[in-house]
Amino acid sequence: MNPSTLEVIGALLFAVALIHTFSTKFFERLAHRQPKHAGLWHLLGEVEIVFGFWALVLVLFIFGLQGKQQGTQYLDSRNYTEPLFVFAIMVVAGTRPVLQFARDLVGFAAGALPLPRAMALCFLTLTLVPLLGSVITEPAAMTLAALMLRDGLFQQNVSQRLRYGVVGVLFVNVSIGGTLTPFAAPPVLMVAATWGWDMAYVFGHFGWKAALAVTTNAAVLTLLFSKELRRLGVAAPVGIGPRVPASIVAVQLLFLTGVVVFAHHPPVFLGLFLFFMGFATAYKDHQDRLILREALLVAFFLAGLVVLGGQQQWWLQPALLAMNADAVYWGATALTAITDNAALTYLGSLVPGLSAEFKVALVAGAVTGGGLTVIANAPNPAGFAILRPHFEDQTIHPLGLLLAALPPTLVAACAFRLL
Image (cartoon, rainbow, N blue to C red):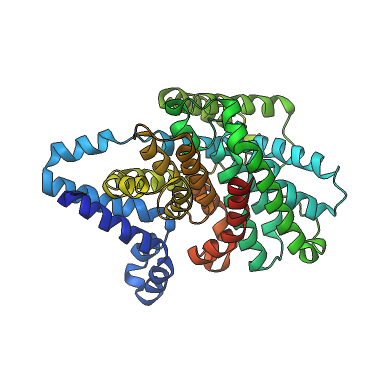
């Protein structure tokens, strides 16, 4: 490795941003101690702001060291499709008609389970919706599951242990639940075309194992907290108005489908999104508040990660290539916790001559570790933004998330490595 000055600065800023994500409570305390600058400290205390803020610092360094032309060329060279897509899919998936359809689907399935209603709904929200992510994409599945949990389980008087347990399982299950197909999970999507992985290959090497791990994680959590869940009623969703006509639901599902089908073509899915905004305005009586603010914060977070991540290849790629197939699985699982898992697999796709075993181990490790931190998987910030107001101090503490996600991560590791 012979990194340039800018690459070293980029790596240092990336490390500072990681530390910042674990230090948001410090900025919240500063806001109380220094009310004159409370707005700034509250801003820096928002996890979704962290990577965008430090990406701005990196851009200022690029402009200062290399000039305006090099700085703009670097920004233009980044691919912002994923942040734009996550923004669009969060807003479309988070509408009352789509949520009504998802709730009806989960509710119908819950009626067939020999469990108390609250337990059945918790289990299915953490199983059926993440697996549905293999069709509607992981960001859409995360948005739907998080909104259903927010409006159902999290509005009730449940313990913080259960809240963290649910979020840990949700993040892990969404990360692995999109691997039944080659187009829904970002880490798989990044390599599927390059390595010639079709539907059968992905399902045979990842999908059925992921489905088993998702079901196991949700079942274990439901059993561990069965006493608490049995005491709960089935809460009426907060903020949900009268039922939406089937015709409106059908149209918005078509918009959702269109955004998913053209997920890699921003001009198309953003055009569909603008038409959706017009439709939602025309039939606003059948809509709740669109989650534009939450989606914009998540898109800002991911765009910042894209900008900062572009300076990390010099140390990430050699670190991966120094491992054998067994080591790369655990290495990818650990590295995913401190960087986006799709970035890891993308770097692997740039290297020629990798063995089939190495490729499978890299992707499996990347999706296994996708629930450990908020930055590990692209959909995580969406779930974080939706659910964090329902935690103490209105934040999901990174260490709490890590500890909660470790057990389901180990279950996923056993499924991918032992089966």
